[in-house]
Length: 124
Image (cartoon, rainbow, N blue to C red):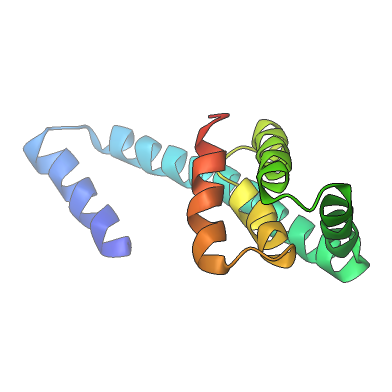
């Protein structure tokens, strides 16, 4: 990653003729944008771990299972939860929250991963 940044800075200065202060400003802006995204993703991961440790993930899983044992209804509920989480946090965080939820209600991981990617693409 650092090598890529150095290569891009060299190209920007020598090939495209960007002034050094523009290169520095673009680098600082890139760090700030990346920090913003990291804070959101780390928040989603922290939310997942707190839900898991407090038992909320298990309670939500049991509620979905007890609501209707039909897999189609469970996928629909997961879709609504994924859209809700995407609307709140963005950046694909439903993958960190709804994916483990699908696995905990009995979906195989090989099904849950592509399913959550499809469910996440709908509200975006």
